[in-house]
Image (cartoon, rainbow, N blue to C red; front, side, top):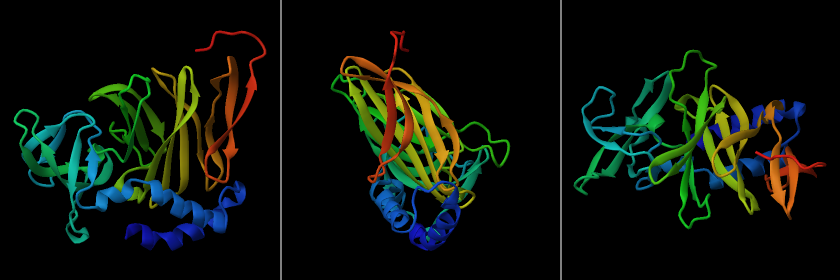
Length: 286
C-alpha cells in the first residue's frame, strides 16, 4: 500500500533530478522501480506468516509493543521468527537511539524448551534484507544481513546501516555504511544482492540498495567486497543526484592473473559493470 501511494511522487522527483547523472529515465525508471520491488524483501514485513530475521544479539521480544514492557524472550543473532500481521491502523511506532521504527508481532521458539511464544519486536532489531550464501565453500551457508547501525544517533544527518556476515549465530564480520536510510521515517524499500566474481579463491561483492521516499528520496547503492575474512566498501553513490561517496579499487583473481578493478556503471539488467586491468608487476595482494 505504501509503495503504491508513493510511486507517482517518486517518479516525478527522480525524473526531475536525474540530469546530473543519467541512470534511469522514463521507461527505464519505471522498469527499475518495479524490478526492484520484485526482489526486495520489504513487503515481507506486511505479510502474515512471513519469515523475518533478528539483526542483533539478544534481541528482546516484549509482551507489548513498548520498550518498557516485560520481556517474553530473547532472540539470538540471525534467529528466524514468523510475522503475525498487525493491521495498519493498529501499527505502533517508537524511537530508539534516534531511529524511529515500527513494532512487529512475531512468533518465536524458546531455545531452552522448544515451545513457541508470541511477542513484539521493534523493527530496528530486525534485518531489513538478508540472504544465505556459502561464502567459505564448505558446504554450509552464512547469513548476510542488512539492518540499522544501532549506535546512538546524534544528528538528523547521522544515518547509518550495517552489513553483517553471520555464521551459526555468531557475528563473523560487519561494516557500517553511512547514509543508507533503512528506518521507518525513510519510507525505504531495500534490496541485498550477491555477485560472485571469482571462484578460486571465492570472491563476492554484495550490493545494498534502497529506494527511499521520505526524509531522503532517491536511489542509494553501495557495493561491498568480501574476501573470506572482511567486508570492504568498494563503491557508494546516490543515483538520483549522481553524488558519489566512494569508488575504491579492489583486486580480482581470474585465469591465474590478478586484476585491479573499479566500479564503472550498470548494464541493462541493473547489474554492476567493472572496469579492470591486469597488474603490471607482481605485488602482494591483500
